[in-house]
Image (cartoon, rainbow, N blue to C red; front, side, top):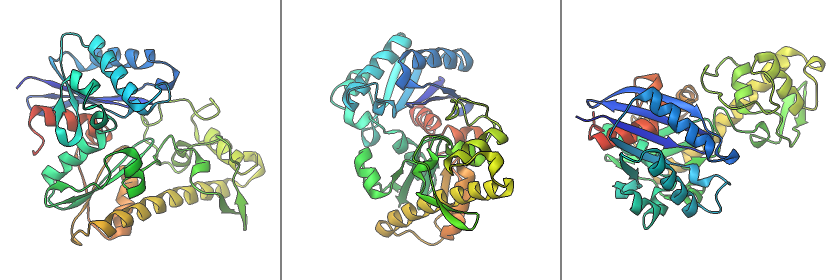
Length: 338
């Protein structure tokens, strides 16, 4: 079988995977802050190709069309298709269009642009549905979390657009790394009272999980909110700033407890979304939560809250962190059910 490279093009990161002989042989993630210019994606594509090796077939999914560098999503898809055609001029390019499957570059940039836009969740959920007849599939990344019910081996998502998915609880703009802390709640219990948060971009969830010792080493690829070090003391200082304090003016265990509370609030938001989804698509009690993404350890806790078994979509942690890129590569290679 000829090798396939799978690409998941996001607004902040580029994820890629190589499937060779029907098996995943490599996967990677590179920073690609598209809002700063298309050249960041072009550079990331060049580096990824150099590291993954050549292939004549490429399967592509994306969310980067949402980036505010583009005037609208349709134009974003078109520009990204053009960029990929330029970066991979001799390759066969297959763009994932959700229920329509793979489409050509011309179709992706034209009639199927709406289906191609932000369809990466569907690729991962389709892979999960081929492996589990009944499940709640969840993928927690650096920025967002998907929550998709699977019934009788079929993806049972209510929403197809981001707007509809947000309303259905199937898309949450909360992730392990890039979510601003101020988006989690308005106030927290601290030093015996309720402390309002500063409505300012002082800290992110990467700081929370770094303080708690739960941030994977390769998860946080973009600059910190203040551009400073990515260490526990620096994250503690950023978190204290959210509470209107310097880190030296607060008790260290209290700030650790604050980080734990923010993680708890984020978990509660995932729990609420899961209940919303399950209220529409009831699943058997033994139907597992199938998890993927950089935040899968949080999803293990979610499964326990839901009193459901947990299983990984991918046994390999590297593959799990790049689920959509791996999924489109496997789907294109015809090995998704294995």
